[in-house]
Structures are given as structure tokens and as C-alpha cells.
Length: 411
Image (cartoon, rainbow, N blue to C red; front, side):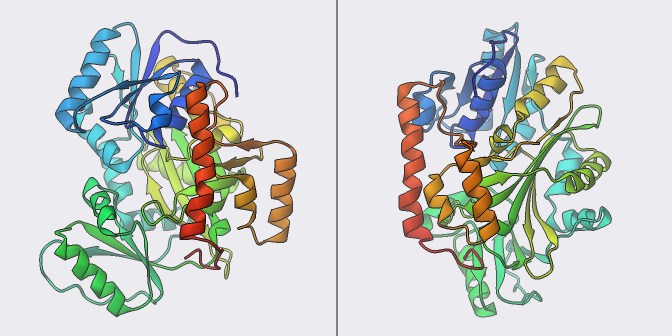
């Protein structure tokens, strides 16, 4: 997609410089022709070499240094509205802590605190889903703080175990062999996980959840935006074809076919409005192959690292944001185009699609040329385009190592 003529009144600022930041900067560039500034100690190479991304280097990601950096950028650009965003759970939590310290020309598009607290409570989220005709998997929250014995789970094995929220504390454990999501087959195995986590001093909550069968193609994604008047103004959705199987990134979609899901949009929209939500929300869902139920697995108070799938489907999330917070326009966007969003080569993704009808649909989309990789942007520098190509091809090596053959459970 070609960038639009540049606007001089807005300046996107992203707290981060990873694989989720580049697509957001690209979305701003396509929509408004603007440069984005990433506030980060060490951005990834595709960002460092980009022709439309600037970096504001800080020694570390601390509240004080980020506030200083954003305030400096605001002083240096007094005629612009700074749109300060985050797209990782820990960064969103940090932005909520510090946003009151920013000057008047800074916009931090986050939901109200009370709404975020309710949405982040996994048990409360399941209750909310039920009241709006949405299903959620059976779940238990396990408190690892302290030394009290953890009782056996009442959820049938095999099951899933994962952190109740993403945190820098848990991410640091990846380098010691801990995983983003665990496939647990017995109580003995689950008890050992609790001992290992406590031995490392991890004291946050974990979630134990029923296992929903089906491979990656049974996963769906939904993204929404609610404006400052409480009106849902954007909906996007997609069927996942393949997820990342690297233990540190497990569950992050790698390839999706964009699909309108108006019935779910309507239910989710009502829930978000009644919750008092504002800004972006992202939901992970899975269809139970036994019953056909769509179960809502996660509610994220952010766009998500695969936000560019909305652009593949014909709409741009940053237009929803700028229309609302800068221009005061209530334009409604609904994803309508069927397309393939993929970070990996289409030939690799195709190997993991077992359903014949879905495979035929996939092949037709590829023949039609509606294939979009968020990291491969023709308007960027040669170095960044080459890096985007290399990142795409790297998935061949990753899947050969972590998920060489598809399974019926995706584990």
C-alpha cells in the first residue's frame, strides 16, 4: 500500500522497537505519510535502518527515562499532537503508570483504569463473556506468591498453563528455559511447574485452562476500536492458519486469512461499550472442533503484534485512532476484504493447512495476489526491505526446529 501525503500535525511515538512496533509505524506511514519515533534502548535492525522511523535511544526502559524522552519530544514539537502508544503488555502497564506526567500535546490512547482492571482479571473476563452470549474456556487462577501448598486442579488433563499476564519478570525466565504456554498432561507435571517457578522467585499468578483441541486453523482473532464517545468505530477479524511455535513466542499468529465476523463484532461491541472501554482491544479465540463453539481465550488492551492484518483486510487501525483523538471524526471501519496476512513464506504456511476447502481458498487468495507481509514494505529503505525478506525466510528454519509437522492439537 502506498503512503498518503504527509500530515504536519501528528507525531506517532511508540514505546518499543520490536517486531510489533514496525507494523504500527508502517500503518501510520501508509495512512498519513508521517515518521514514527521509537523510544527504546536497542531497536531491531529493520527499525534502525528504516527510512520512516526515527529512534530515541534511552539507557534502559524505566519510567523516569521514558517520561523524560517523551517530554523532550513534546517540547521539540510544540505544534504537533504526539500519539504515544505501546504494544506489549508490560509497556502498556508502564504507559498507564506514567501518562499523567506527559504535557498537554501528548495523547496516550489507553482505556480507563477500571475497565483495564476488569478485563485483565481472567475469571471476571469469563463472566463478562457469558453475560453477552460469548463462551470462554474453563479456567483457574493459581497464586504463586507465598509458600502455601497449591491444591490440585479440577480441570481435566491434558490442559494449558500460562502466565495470567505478560510481565517483564516472566519474560526474563524465557532465557532459563521457561515457556510462554505449557501443555500439561498430568498433576505431577503441573506440580513440578509450580515448584520450578517458585524456585526462580516468580510470585505472580498463573492460569490453568482447559485444552481446546484443533490445530492452529481453529484459532481466530478479533480487533476493535471504541472512540471517546463510547462508539465502536473499527472491527477487524481473521482466521489463523499458523501460529509461532517457538517456546518464547508460542501462540503469536504467523499467518491469517482475514474474514468479516459481524455476529461476533456485534456481541463484542456491546460488551466493550458496557465495560466503558475506550481505544483498542484485541481478542484471541478458538473454535472447539467437537462442538463448534467459539471460545474467547484472551482479552488484550492493545492492538497486538499482528495489527497489520487489518490493513490486509482493507482498513487501517491508525485511521480509527486519529479520526477519534485528533480529528473528532466518527467514521466507522469494518474489515471486508478477504486476504492472506503472513509473516512466513506462503509455501511454508500451505504445508500446515490440512482442510481441503481451506486449502483451496488459500490457493485462490495467493493466485489473486492478495498476500501481505507486515515486515516487507516497498516504501521503506533497501536495507529494511532486505531485512524484511530475511525475517520472512527465517520462519523456514524456525518451523523446521520447533514444529516440523502439524498436529491435531497444535502442540
